[in-house]
Image (cartoon, rainbow, N blue to C red; front, side, top):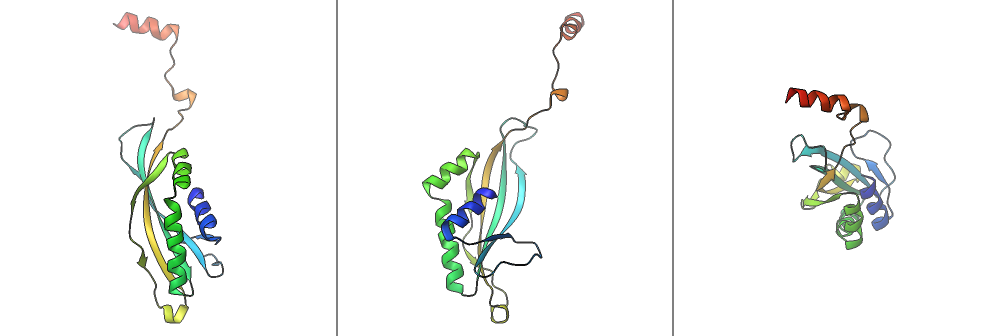
Length: 150
């Protein structure tokens, strides 16, 4: 998420908050991030180079619908810049799917919070480090026992 928050800050200069919290919201305009489906495995029982999908919803909040759309569009374009894609690839992730920008505004006349969003799913390659105590230990005794058993 820090990579995505960094792109938002670089592209717009705006603050980003966690979207599903009840914390005090930053002043308008701002962004909210809502992770969803944070680990959808694509491989089974793989610990080396596991592939999985992770998704994030990126919301642009502003007091003008045009400002919310423009800010979100700036982020959408920035996420696919070659230098940003290189940075994501260094973190072993790349964009997989991206939904269209949608208007998610509710009661805009009452709240003056115009909310536009899109969702993006990344495919991630990750590896686990297995603690030494769980790794099979090869010793002279193991070798001798295996030879006797065979």
